[in-house]
Amino acid sequence: MDVERNNDDLVHCVYSSAGTVEFSHEDIIELLKNARENNSKLGITGMLLYDNGSFFQVLEGRHDRVTSLLKSIQQDDRHNHIVKIIYETIENRDFSEWTMGYSDVTKEDLRKIEGLNDFFRSNSSYIDLDKGRAKTLLKAFKDGQWRASIN
Image (cartoon, rainbow, N blue to C red; front, side):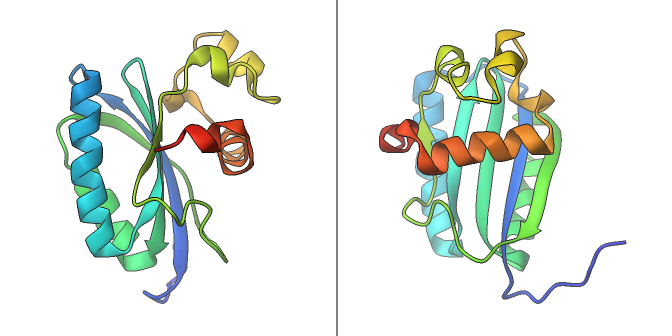
């Protein structure tokens, strides 16, 4: 049973999805441009990772706005297999300076993250992440060396 939330509650939603179309670098740049404009209007922040057809995204903001945006994403036919990994109330935003941060991280980079190296060594994709590994990945990007590469 879902707990009723105040629309002012600050939440983050972490989800993964599989692309239904092939995204070129230019497609990702266009997607980011649109997301940043939309997120700025909604007061949503976060980050996005993309690798070989799969997405990993964090959305931070008011409960009602994050929920509405996630519903919109779920209806976007460029994605399928959308898996909500984490949806919880948070005290502070981890990615407050980005309406949508993005990093060109590679699987080789991901294999260097302690606690994820075995996962990405087996050619797993973001859609296979569980809650524990998703939190490990978030911590690596919140505190780690890749934070500087997010643009």
